Image 1 (cartoon, rainbow, N blue to C red):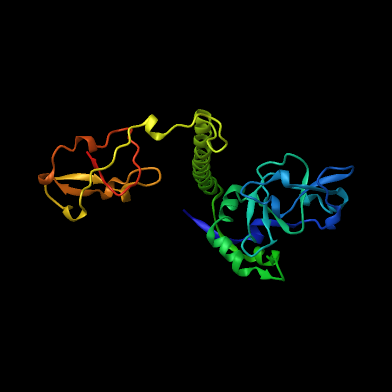
Image 2: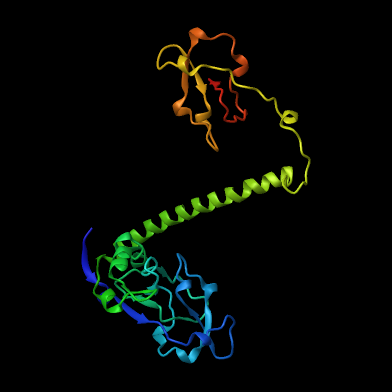
Length: 282
C-alpha cells in the first residue's frame, strides 16, 4: 500500500466556529434563529439533540454551515477531551457550530470516513493531549498547529477500502455492546415478570426448600487431594463464579477412597451455591 505524508492543512480546510454571547443561546428555536452545536454535541456520533439556537446573523460565512462529510473537533475542552472528534454523516437541519469547536472540511482527495477514523487513533489523540495549551481550567488546540500535523494518505480507493473495513468492525462492536446492554435489562425484566418485585412485597414468597431439593456437599478432606491417578473431579467453592463454574481448576480426589457418592454428582440444571464442601463433577 503506497501512501504519502501530507499536512492536514494541505488536505483539509479548517473552519473556525462562530462566536456569540452565552446569553443569546436558547434551548428552543425563535424567529431568525439557527441551530448551533457546541462541544457537548461532539460525541462518538453527533448529538444533534444537544444543539442550542442562536441568531442566524452570528454566522458570518456560508462555510460555517455544516455539510455532510465535515468533521468536528473539540479544540477547547478539558485536557482529556480536547481533540475529540466526530464525522457529520448528514445534516438533519441547518446548523452551525460554536467557537470551542473547529470544522474540518476534507478536500476531494480525502475520503471523510478515513480521516475521521484516523482522528480517533491513540496517536492523534495523544498528540492533541501533548500539544494542547492550558489556561485556568481549559485546554486549547491551535488551528495553526493542526494544519502542520502530517498524516499518511493512500490513494482514494485505498482510503475507501480501509474505511469500509473499519466501519464493519465498528458495527460489530456496537452490535455486541447493544447485545450486552439488552441482556443487562432483559434478564432483570424477565425475572420481575415471572416472580414480581420481591423487595416491594408483590408476588408470592416461598422458601427455597419449597421449590428445590437442598443438598449438602460431601465433606472431602483437602489433604487427601491428588494431582494424578484414578480420581474423582470435585467442584469447590472457589470454582463457583458469579455466572458460571470454572471447570479449569477442579480438585481431584482418589477413587480408591470413594464409596457410593451418586447423590453428590452434579447434574445439568443444578444450581451451585459456594459453600465449604465440594461436589463431584463428571
